Structures are given as structure tokens and as C-alpha cells.
Length: 175
Ligand SMILES: Nc1ncnc2c1ncn2[C@@H]1O[C@H](COP(=O)(O)OP(=O)(O)OP(=O)(O)O)[C@@H](O)[C@H]1O
Ligand SMILES: Nc1nc2c(c(=O)[nH]1)N=C(CO)CN2
Image (cartoon, rainbow, N blue to C red; front, side):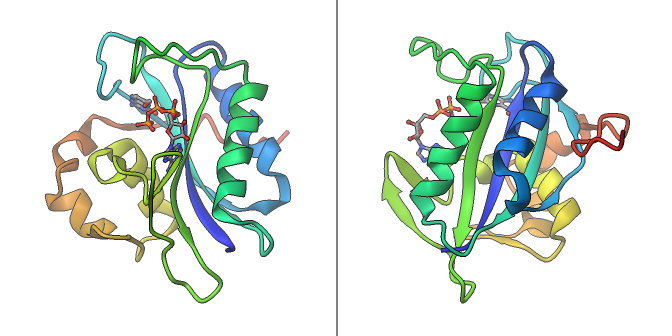
């Protein structure tokens, strides 16, 4: 199992620093990082705006559950506190495994509640699909088709216009 698309989100504290914490945890396995977008809160609207980005990561030795374990490591490193009473509530860092592909480019499918693949809400989220198409214009979200179609006529299409690119907030530090 080698490739994964990860979604990063932060809306508490130093949001960019938290996204960069995730970059650091995945280190050399980051093949491409998207640009950063400022996005209105989805699912639970009474919270601050998020910064969102995605990473395409590659590790020939990583099983799907390894990506999830490393996502949790990144969230913990950013000091995430879980509030079980608030499902889509604010957080320093959220790292979701959007999809995983095998060496021979087959999507990994799973209905395990601990690691559902692809992520069951990815197709509903402009904050995942919009940064993703920047780095993989011809990608498909397994089970949901082309990103181009999802962004133009899928359930998240109307939200795309609410996202704001933040080229001033690069994930990869140039200094
Ligand atoms: N593809 C996936 N990526 C990340 N977590 C997943 C995935 N599939 C299932 N999970 C499980 O979801 C549980 C809740 O994760 P988390 O607290 O990050 O959810 P959330 O961020 O509030 O909601 P969402 O997953 O919709 O962004 C975790 O215990 C994790 O094991
Ligand atoms: N814009 C935006 N909204 C969210 C996000 C996120 O990353 N970005 N993450 C959530 C956690 O499930 C809930 N809502």
C-alpha cells in the first residue's frame, strides 16, 4: 500500500503552524502539498474559519492503517483535544485519510469504522476537493468519480466559491 491523499484542517491557535506540524510528521513521504485555503466551517457553523490543505503522500511500506496512525500522531503533536460532545467542532489539527491506493493504482476500499476508505464525507467537502484538484487535476475520488465533475455538479459544488486561496500561507516554508 503506497499512496494516500490526506486532508489537513485547523481552526484553533496558530493554524498554519499546525498544518506545518502535519507536514513535518509526514516528512519525506510528502510527494506534493497543495496550497492553503481559508474555508468557512462545514457541518458545525458556530466556529472560526479553517485553514485547509491536502497532501499526497507515498511510502512503499505503509499499510492503510499506518497512514491513520501517523495522522493521529500529527494531531497529538498539534495538541488536539477531543470533545466527544461536539462532532464537527473546532480543533487545532484534523488529519483525515481521504483515500489510499495500492502500488498498482487500485483504490483501497474499507467499511471499517476505524478507517473507512474512501473517507465517507470527502465527496461532500469543497475544502477537500478544491485543494486536491490543484495537485491532481485528473484524479478520481473512488466511488464518486472525477474531481472535475464533483466540483462542478457534485454536492459540494455550491460551496467552492466560498473558499479563499491563501498563497501568502504556503505549507512549505521558503525561509
Ligand atoms: N478515513 C478516515 N480518516 C480519518 N479517520 C477515520 C477515517 N475513517 C474512520 N475514521 C475514524 O473516525 C474517528 C473520528 O475521527 P475524527 O475525530 O478526526 O473525526 P472528525 O474529524 O470529527 O470528523 P470527520 O472524520 O468527518 O472529519 C476516528 O476514530 C477514526 O478512527
Ligand atoms: N471548513 C472546514 N470545516 C470543517 C473541517 C475542516 O477541515 N474545514 N473539519 C471538520 C472536522 O470534521 C468540521 N468542519
